[in-house]
Image (cartoon, rainbow, N blue to C red; front, side):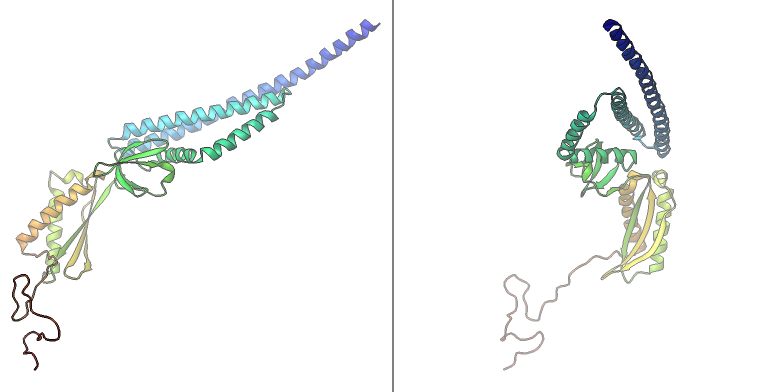
Length: 317
């Protein structure tokens, strides 16, 4: 009798375990299917975003296009790996919970580790996130001339944590990406060369503006330089009335890296043209007026003080 009851109880436990096993297997299958569907959606959306960013980089052109495309694809690969790891951990925790395994200790340990990493490496994480956004938003690329965090130079490397610049003197600056609040790109898409030319107050302003316009037209039509210009030159006219000169301003829109070379060449040309036209480019100078009886030799200047006579008048008795 006792043996029969024991066998009956064992059979009941087996039936109960079988009844619990089926729902758990179904729940596990649903979780895995949901994971696969979510991963498929993320991959499709990410692939479309990467393709759009790649097309934009190709449309902009330039020597750094292959590097930009490779960087975009690399970032997407890293982000994809992070997403896979995150989803995998979530799936494992959900499955453990569905099978009756307590995940509270695991969550507690993960929280402690996360807080420790958050406090200890917050600057590092901030730099990495900023570096990812810099590349993703195409704020600047290799070869661009930029100003970031009070450093100006040519971009030599863009890493997830730092941006490397080399300035005109050859110094290399390593700027943490998290420290960049404003990034000024001097060579993205196009550049503008601002031309300021001073003329003397005795010069004819209208003539000077016409000479400036004519020289700009000749410059932009020069076969050696014409390929560098994006738009016709703009003449703004009189920009300021200074202490000793009248400032004329013009604008040239050029390819990104041609700004400085174009400006130097045009200043050379306009100086020669103004000299030929008799238009004076003034400069500050000092006129020395010697008092009567003075001597231009060092140490023999006229006396000063109560006994000295004013210029051109006899001393009082």
